Image (cartoon, rainbow, N blue to C red; front, side, top):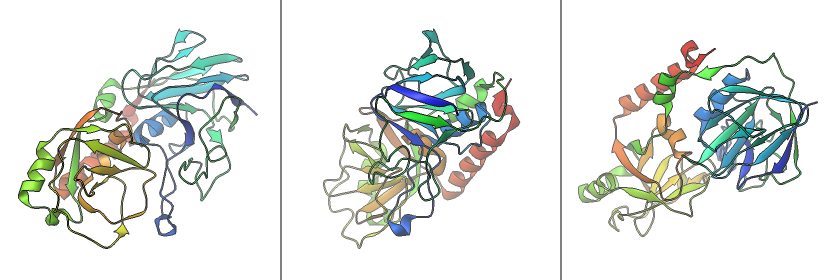
Length: 313
């Protein structure tokens, strides 16, 4: 069986697929790829099912050896990748020959880069998913980020190498956004017009303390007293909470499954992958959209990802 040998793990590299839906009542958040679009496209480039497990690298990439070779693709942000010192393009399939080494550097654009290999990465599933859930230490490779010396098994390949690339026009349509579109949150009517004006008119900066559980924002505080007190309830990915102090928190892929802060808005499904490419100190704004517009944007995105024109040979 082929394998990937981890020579350097990078800052935070984990095994991720599309997550484990449906376990919120048990207190288990979905986890999964922070930028699911990049993982899905990467898997298509190498001939996998779009939910196959790959590697998610954060801010700083790792160094990986392929003793038996592999068909691979890198998607997401530009980490200055090289294969045996030759530059390796993003959004394009490539073949690593026996013994070749893939090196990635600090990010040159967004927060995360994805490595997909034909056959996917084989790990023991947890609740039906290969995703690493860092908060609980479950799933993925031993429930943790990769370390130097780890060896990952690659699943059985289902084809020979052929060079594929993502169409330029398609890439433009799935590029990460800094203006995040949102629908009203469950408690949006708790916030008076003055508080909502602050929220929608402000540019916020992603705080250093942000992680896969949530993105903490710095900037103009939504006026205190806007939200009131509430009973803890279930929360969803992309929910924008306003805690005491007024600085928003966007709940992300490893979010707690319940929360007691009022939620002024929710990032639409079509923009969730953009959250995965936000780095500390990035500036963002929020743009309100209607429910039907949010549904239409998701339909358009899914049609693009399923289209034959997405990948060119």
